[in-house]
Length: 46
Image 1 (cartoon, one colour):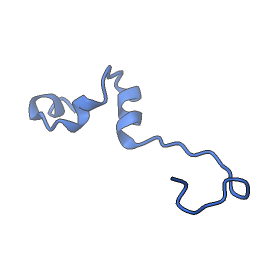
Image 2 (tube, one colour):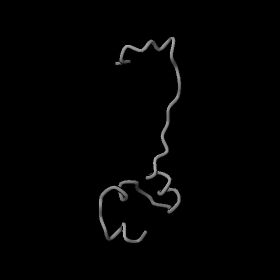
Image 3 (tube, one colour):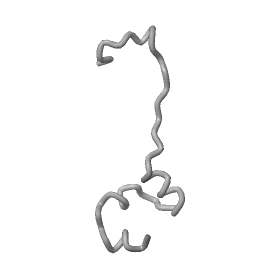
Image 4 (cartoon, helix red, strand yellow):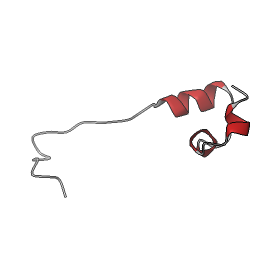
């Protein structure tokens, strides 16, 4: 499952803060899925 990478040699931490999450925080959206559903009635508010 580790794709041939030795976890004893390579360790780290990864995270993502995509555009959707930043927009949800900025506009106080309760659900990220509202941004990706493609509902133009919702998206036209922005």
